[in-house]
Length: 402
Image (cartoon, rainbow, N blue to C red):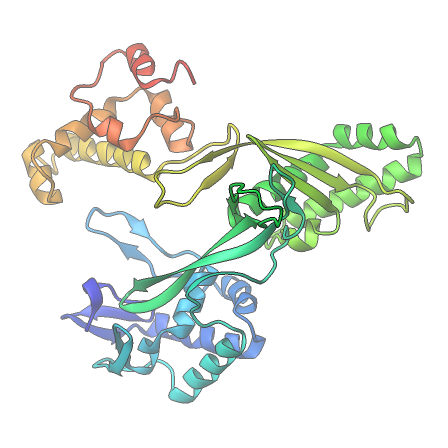
C-alpha cells in the first residue's frame, strides 16, 4: 500500500504502486553500506553529503519544489529503520510482506538493525534525563539551579512508518529545599546554536578581545596567543561541519539564563592560549527573544532583533506573485479559474492576490524575516482591501514602528 501517494527515496509511484528508482536505490544501498562501514549514524551523515546523496526531490501541485537537500540525522535514522527497503510494508505496529521489490537484502537489514539497537537507537517513550549535551551542567536558570539535558519522545507516522521523534531540552534541576519553584525549560538545539553563534561573534571581534586581555595583563605574548587561539576556534566553527561541543566546550565556564538574556562566562586563557594561573574569565551577555505559538508548539529562541522568517507569510507573498504572473501572462484568464485550479474556497485567491502589490520594501522585509512581531499570515489573509499608498501600507502593517 502506498500511503497518501508519496513514494520514499529509492522508489517512485506509478499506478498506485511502488517501483524501484534505479538512481535513488543505488543511493539507498550506499547509505546502508556506509553506515555498516563507519559504525554510527552521524559518520555516514557527513559522508553522504560528500557523495551528493540527498533527500528525494519533489514538486507539489503548485509547482513548489522540496527536498534535494542533505539528509538530516533524523531522516537518515528513519531510512535505516524503514522495513520498506526489504520489500515489507508497515501497518500500525505490524509489518507485512509488501507488493514492491526490495532494495536491500535481509542480511544487510539485520546487521543494520542490530547495530542501531546496540547504539540505543530504538524508540523510547516518555521523558528522561539522559545523555549529556555540550552545555549540560554549565547552563543555569535565573534562580541558580543547574539545567540538565532531557528529552521528550513523541510517536509520529511518516510515510506509513511509525517512529519516535525526540525533542531535546535543558531543564532546571528540582531542588530539595521544599520550595515550589517553577521548572524552566529551554529548547536544546536553539540554545546551543544561539550560544555558539554568540561566542563565535565575540571571538571574532579583535577589538573586544584586545580590551579584555589588556584589562587582565599587558603581556603582548599573551595577547598574541589569545588572538591566535580565538581565530582558530572561529575558523573551526565556520567550517563545513561545525561542532560547537569540540570548539567551545573547554572555554565555557558558566551560562546563566536570565530574563530576556543569557550571561555567558568564557575563559580566554583556556587550552590553546598562554598559561595563566588564574585563567582569564570574561563575561558578556546575549539578548534573546523567546516566543511560543500556543502551548502545543515548541519554544522558539532567537537572538534579540534576529530575523524570524515566517513560512506562512513567505508562502502568501509567493502565491500572490505567482497568481499575478498567471493573470498577466494569460495562463489564467480570470481569478475564478485560479481558484478552481488550486482547489481553494471562493474569495481566497482575491484576498491573497492583492499582496502582489505590497510595497517592495515590505515584501523584502517579510522574505528576510524582518516583519513586525504582530504581523501574521492570518492577519494578512483577513485584510479585505489593500491600501494603495505604500506609506499607508507601512503604517497599517506596523513597519514604521519596526
